Length: 183
Image 1 (spheres, rainbow, N blue to C red):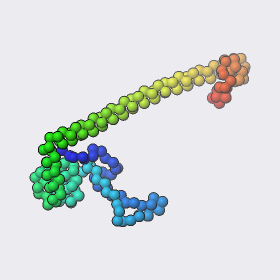
Image 2 (cartoon, rainbow, N blue to C red):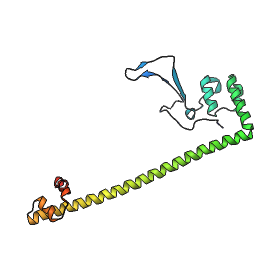
Image 3 (cartoon, helix red, strand yellow):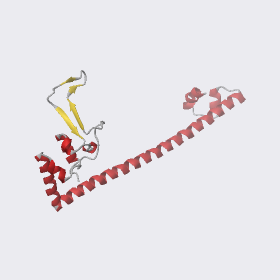
């Protein structure tokens, strides 16, 4: 069981460790080599080699990604990781703390599940609204095409100008320029 491990990926690269420096984007001048931001994305870490071949950073990532068992923790010379395992075990023995932790994890999962459902619902509503708008646009285009056809017929049969045909068909004067551009 991981304690506080993030369940999402933040950065685009596949590696679990990324380093960013501070620089001026106008000229790419690096402010200082002594200051950098390190990002560790725990869900991206995959244990690929034996414990003895891991770097100290990889061991910590393996610990936080819950990819070490207690036997492996005992093998490690890093006292801090052994202490972290001991603290985790002590924490898990306290029923009140463990239940609070489990409840918090369940609340996070419920929240994520609800958000996924709301997103799906929003997408479905958006698609339906889009379909309705498309249908309305289609109906409007159909009405426009029908009216243009009628204007052309009146112009041909009665030898009217476009304006006379629109007046004959009771087209509002405000719409004349729109239909003239389509004829």
